[in-house]
Image (tube, rainbow, N blue to C red; front, side, top):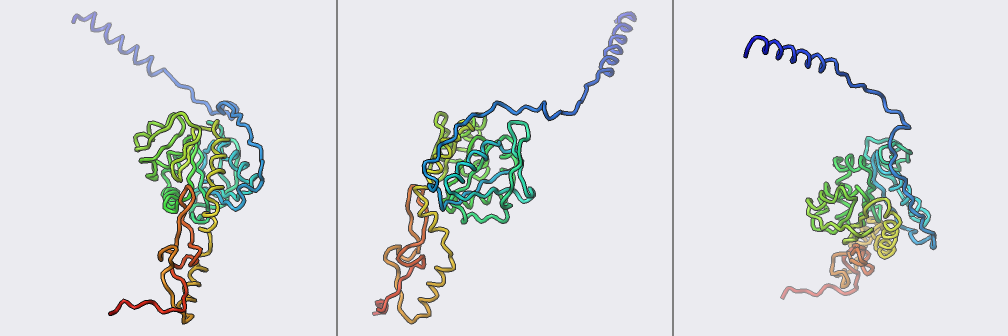
Length: 303
């Protein structure tokens, strides 16, 4: 390369470096009114035809900061207007109130009824998991939340999730082998977790897991929860009976001097199962003890 060409190359590099160094990117603070609140959801309210249709049902809405506002406020109004009792349960580090969003924009605060370490899953007939892009990210990495969801599954409680909410089911290990739906951008994740993804139904029920696609399905989602609990409420209520009462019955058998024998109805388990969700409930014959009193001594098998 001759000297002139070399000088031109060096000058070109110096000029380009100078232009690059002079470049600046302006960083400006976001103004609240500039934040995208997404498209408004106009989900019609379902008329209340029976203000007692959910009386006796206790529902836990489990949420962290960043849930989509309508995915909690709409079900909250639906459940309470039909007689249900609702708790809003948040991770332990969220105190007193939890923040809703509309797409990217913070919108309202809702009061926290209990933190997750105070919540007992057997107090509830159902747990509900709302979506929102941020809320499931927090909840699916919170071990206490995941244990609560897993406990609900073991107790055969209804677990209802909408929109991005089924991501929590993935992290809790509950998606595999289940028919599940969710918002479009998580369906690949659901499929990768082993779920049978349903694309074209507003509500999908598989055993005790009920899911919906997005806020546009909220009316059907809430009606699905109402229908499920109405069918299973008797079993749900019987699960809430005081275990100490059943134990005291067993103790009185032991101390009464009467003989006891294995309950012929529950075969000694103390539990029966029923309803579409196959809820376990205390046997009516033995009050959950597995044994009934008799004035006859047990038949000896010692020959």
